[in-house]
Image (cartoon, rainbow, N blue to C red):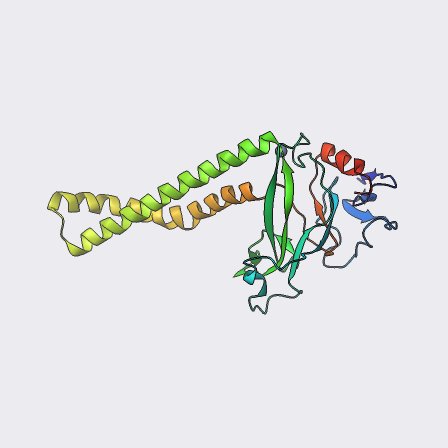
Length: 260
Ligand SMILES: [Zn+2]
């Protein structure tokens, strides 16, 4: 069944697109003079990366080179686009884009986009494809300050705690595994201790692999990453703007910024 929905905008809504969603395939209207240039429709992107209600945020190239950006310029035959260092180029309202609540602080963020087979500037997708586990090269760094609400702050605190606890547990598992293996190999412990070692060595080995590597590490990284990303970015098709997932309250606040 065909579903059609239209999002309207007003003349002052810079960084905001009028678009129509039909058959789940969003189409953007021609931009006016105060909006970013035409959003390119290519077989590569075909707008399938944009969600309903997303907001476009204007970007520009960084005025100064970013520190520790060597990851962008490492040689890779998998990279198909020019490395870019970008920053937010417009005022962002003091509203949380996830919850639509008033912001209590701004979080400095630094997001890496990767040159995957799916998209040349894809946020947070470390492999080049589902069927190819070679790491996709970094293609874009985006930095800026983003408003977050009290809920986001609480959630970040919890995620950091969980990531820290996981790190401690994984460290303890690795140390115990090394000690048990070394003691067994050197045969320096009393017999009762060797017996205990023989009992625990297999569970410990499973806790190391796959428990810690890769499962524990991946889970800890997911929790840690959550604390460093105050907003969900979409893949970047044009260096002049990026779409972000937006709460209706955040969209209204973006539209209320004169010439924003
Ligand atoms: Zn929030």
